[in-house]
Length: 68
Image 1 (tube, rainbow, N blue to C red):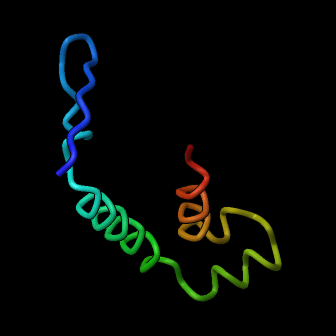
Image 2 (image 1 turned 180 degrees about the horizontal axis):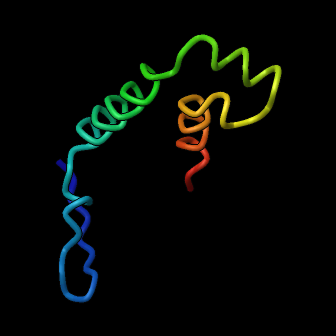
């Protein structure tokens, strides 16, 4: 395990002591949770209407990857 020592107002960040594989696994679980709620009709609505209210789960999934 590789630990980066940083402090935020005198406290060590717990995020930086996690295993990279553990972080990747948790991100994949989160992405899958979002993905499994997308209904097939949402893809069609996205192409035909471009109205996010017609494909709320797909819109949420897309926005998830736009987070910086």
